[in-house]
Length: 285
Image (cartoon, rainbow, N blue to C red; front, side, top):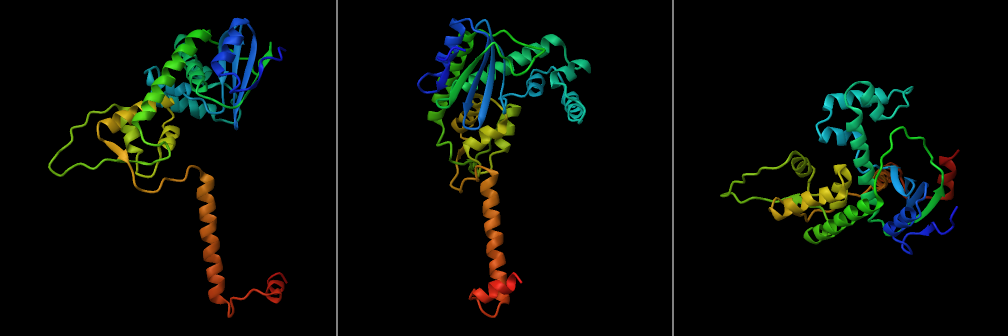
């Protein structure tokens, strides 16, 4: 393996790393790690053929549904079938076997899914990478053919767009709320379904980062919708405390409250609040 194709992101940007692989016409897998996230991108003769990560930017069923290729009921049926313990097939193959989607439509959806994954990678400014020459971790039945140059150009356009949108929105750790309207002015609002869904999720406690995560849409799309809602005066920054960013924070707070209640109850029942060596011994006897 070429030892030059491994190292830290920062010394090399991901577009530069992709270009090295493309210019060398290399075949193999590029592994990229950022904190706990690991993404694998497959190459053949310098062109991208597949990619996957622990949190795909877009779900294959979601992409097909957005294009009107499958119904919500068909997607639900296929997912339910896939969830059976003895089924190891990919969702796309199940959709084809059930006659819900054609091969061409599936191929286009997979290509878009891989592109969205690559677009999300281009914003990574830290982490590590390693290229595995002539190695693929999985044997994919459906592969794509994507130009490195084209995907980098489109990804950087989106990055520029995201940077512009960030200037429109408040700090991403700030919660958003639905703006109040004056009593003498009725609003006549016409929104797309995804804009309604996003608006319904704004509760005055959720931050922009949380809204992006829960939208299950590409970051630039969610940011674009949030910026539009803000510029239209429909949402604004909230003055409420932000919602905890993870379940661990919520769990710690809950355990802390329970512990305080437990200690308060023990103090009320005990004739003395002093803890001595004798009382500890009695509690463990």
